[in-house]
Amino acid sequence: MTAIEYRRLEPVTVYAASGVAPGGEGVPAVIDRILPPLHGALEAAGVEYREPGTFWYEPLDGGDLRVWVSWIAGDEPVEGDGWQVVELPAAERSAVTTYRGEMSGIGEAWGAFMQAVVADGGEFDGPCREVYLQADGPQSTWVTELQQPVA
Image: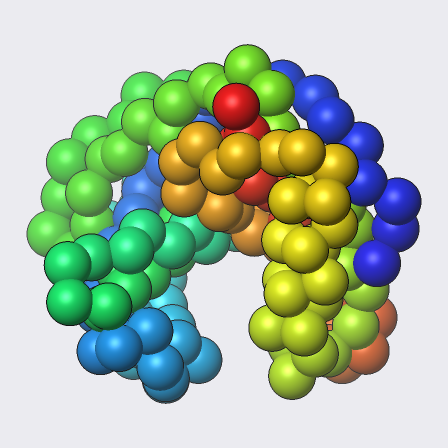
């Protein structure tokens, strides 16, 4: 993880799909279940979308977790079968750090990041996001930005 910086997140329009991780467990399996059909639907429809991929997580009642996966929509977003058009809102202040490496270590990175944000006096103010800046090739080379809106 890199040092934490605090900055504004700009709004972004994405093509997204979601699933639920019961009890907040099994997030990778949920991603594996929803990501390929989203990609396939976008490709089949021929809509313009681009990197980076953005994932975000919303707590649900009962301890479940809604897991969203997305790509940035092109200049003229359209609704379609297999995805939703979602406007991720701006966040005036967000804690941001960069994680490099295997996805098997991202949970530990999130834990350390969240603890550091709380130690800085941050109060979480919305769903956290992962932005996959580099996600080609072996996971050991991946670069993921962790973002947490804070009050």
